[in-house]
Image (cartoon, rainbow, N blue to C red; front, side):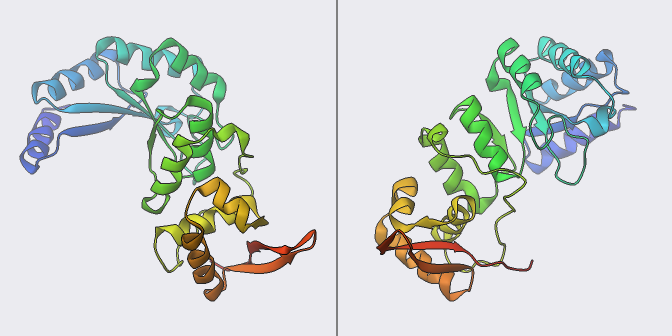
Length: 243
């Protein structure tokens, strides 16, 4: 705070940035955060506060987090980023998601003030399913934009949400366009699955799905077999791969 923050913001402005994200720290008092907000506002920046227990202190209670967020929103209606980190056990909401805290925050304050940072696709889908299509998500993988957009448009509660424990991140070495990666993700999430069901849940043209399936088979990522209950159908499953 020794005037270095003001200089940093000026330099960011000269580079053309217009959003600043700051992690809230347990060592910061309300007065410290008010100074930060005043400096940000003086340069017409948009401010986003990021929360994770790693910076706030792992044993901080949900009540304390709620109070800190409430105080910040009273000072200035900025975006609040709630972060999930795969490599740490110090998340605001863990891999199972702390719905109690999220429900309290979104019911007390408008949901529009919150951004949920998670790179785990099933969690992103759960957040859309629980909070609706207008939920703000961060850390969406470029290749998952189509999936997230599709999920926002669908009544997703009719589908079984893939579990976090059983669903790995998308294979990074898939060749082909976004549709092939999308189809791979759907097979990974709902395997085994037949082509008719893929058409229904993705709403992609059958020709696009068939081309994607052929690409994935050539790469040895999926298997194709006859449905034992209906010889006219083919079903698709994953072939175990090493990463």
